[in-house]
Image (tube, rainbow, N blue to C red):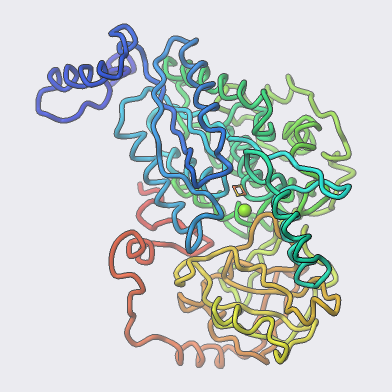
Length: 574
Ligand code: FES
Ligand code: MG
C-alpha cells in the first residue's frame, strides 16, 4: 500500500467486525462520546504514550508534559490522544524493576500497534522505563518521537549539594561506618530527592536519556533539560509538533524508528555511553534495544571503543557534578562535538537532520570543565570495559571510571555468598572471615535467579572493614549495580550461576585473578576441576520457581546479560 492509500487518523487499523465501514462508524461514534467534534475526529492522530503513575516519583510532572505535547500536536493541525502504559518506578518494584522492563516494552509495542495513530510521542525516563519504551517502539510502523521527563535538581544540605543517588550511597556508606548519626541520615533522606524528574547524576536514567538523544530518537538538545525547567515543557511541545510533521510526511521523510536506530547510530550511542562515564545498566539496555532490530552489540567491540573513547564528562558517580551542570554546560552537544571525529555523522535524528548538520548548526558547548575537550579528557579511557575468562566465559562488565585503579591488576581470595539471603545474613557478622584484600563474590543474582538480576552487585563493605576505614574492595557477581554507584565492582558475569555458569562453583578460599589491562577474569582452578564442580551442581530435575503467570514466562524466556536480558521471542526475527 502506498502512503496515499494508507488510511489516516481514526481510520487506521480498524477493529475487526467483518465490515470496515461499520467499524469506522462505530469507532467515530464512541470517540464522539468523548466530546470531540467531527472536524477533530477527521484529523491525523498523534498518540501520546504516557507513563505517569503514583508509584513513579520521577514521572510526577507527566500531566504537564502531556499537556504541552498536546499543545504542539494541536497547533500543528493534529488530534492528540493520550494513552497510558504501565510505569516502572525504580524503587517501588519487587523483586527488581528489570524484571518488568520486558513486560512494559510489550505493552508499549502492542498499544502503538493496536490503536489508531499516525505518529506517537513516547514520554518517560525512570531507569527501566526509557529502555522499555525504546525497545517497544523499535519496531513501530509509525514515526516515534521520544521525550524524556528530564533529571531532578539537587538540593542544598550542610553547605553542599545533594542529588539522588550517588550521594544516597555515599551517606549510607558513612552511616554504616558510624560517621553519620540516626538523626543525620533522616535529614539526608529528606534532602536527596526533592523535585520531580529522574536521578540527578549520570545514573541509568540520565545515561539512557543521553543514549536516546545519541541514537536520534529525541529532538536534539533535550537529554539534560531538568524536569522542572520551562525548556522541558517546550521540548514536549516541540516533540508533539514534530511528531505531527512526521505523521504527514511521505516517502523517505516519514522516518520510522528502524530508520533512526541503525548499526551506525548504535555505535554513536556506545561512544556516548563511554564518554559520559555512563551506567553499566545501559550496556544491557542498549543491547536489548538494538536487538529488537537485529543489531548486535558485541562486548569485544565495546572494549575496542572503550580504549579509543575517553571519559569527557565530569558528572557523578564518575566525577563531581550533576545533570543540571551538564545542562548549564550546553547539554550533550558538547560531548558530540568533542567526539565528532569518532562519530558516524550521516546518521539521522527524528528532527530529520543528519548529525553532521546538527553539529554544524549548534555550537552551544559553553563549559569545558564539565564537558572536556577530546585532548584534555576527564579520564583517558572509556568508562566501561568487558572482562572475559574462566570465571566469565561470555563476559562481565566493570565500570573502571568509577572504580579504584589500584585494584585493577589483582589476585585475591574469594569470600563467597551463595545468594542475597546469605549475603544479608553474614556480611556484617563480626565473625566473618574476611580481609580487605579478599574478593567478595555473590552467586545466584543473575537474570534467571529468583532475585532476577537486581542492583545488588554493589555488595556492602563488611561493617567491620568499613569501620576500619576500608572504602573499596573487588566485588564480583552476576547481578547489576545502580548507575549511580561506584567501586571496583565486576557485574553481569555471564553465564550466570543459575544458568550453569562457573560463577556458581566458586568456593570460599578459591583464588581469582582480575586484570583490567588484559580484560580478564579467571577462577584459578584447572579446567578439569571447574568442569568436575559444574557437573556436581548440575540439577537433575529443574523445579520451576514460578509455575504460572508473567514470572513463569520471564523465567522461561529471559536471555543472559550479553543478549540484553530480553525475552528470546522479542528479539528481531527475519
Ligand atoms: Fe527514577 Fe532514579 S528513581 S531515575
Ligand atoms: Mg538507578
